[in-house]
Length: 246
Image (cartoon, rainbow, N blue to C red; front, side, top):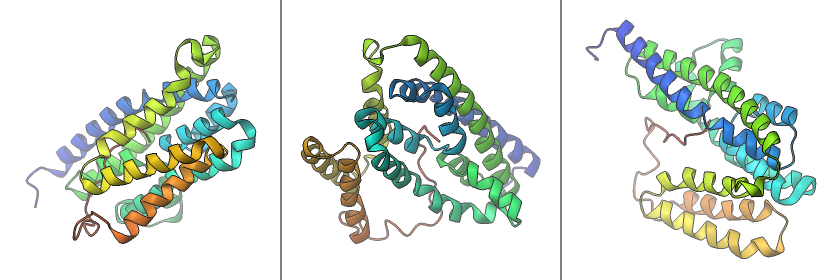
């Protein structure tokens, strides 16, 4: 039983949520600029953030579109969906926190992301968990979309992305997402094997497909739990690691 009063715990959760929202929202500027550099216009970029609202999937989508154009749209959609599938697991974990009611659950679905889940599950009091979820999720949604607009407008003004190195920013962003997760033998093995598969297939396949095929490596390793150790996947209260993106 926590000794922190529920009101104080709720305030602390709200402060944590706002801090995470501010830090994460700033990254939307990069997405907006990259999306425009990849061929989307400002309105398409903004709609993508409003509707998709999961940073990893958004970066995957514009990265594939930027490399292969509209012909690579199916692979871009598949790559984005693959990365976004983790939110299904988050939704199952957050169901007791959100509570009952169709409209409450429908609204929460849009805000169930890495950061809102992490902040919520970091709290000890039930009320604080609920506050942490909503403050973080709504805060990031507003901030991410505003910064996406700013980045898209800025990227449109900058012109040729190669002049500023924006054409390489997507790869750098994914590396930043990946690096904190390389803990333990299994994560390192999956990353190395997937990188080899993607690099070997890239010259001969449409952009986006090597990424999807490389993901099969992670699925196989995770299914058989190679190098994962006993009990590695059986801790229901694990807090998902923050990616720095929604």
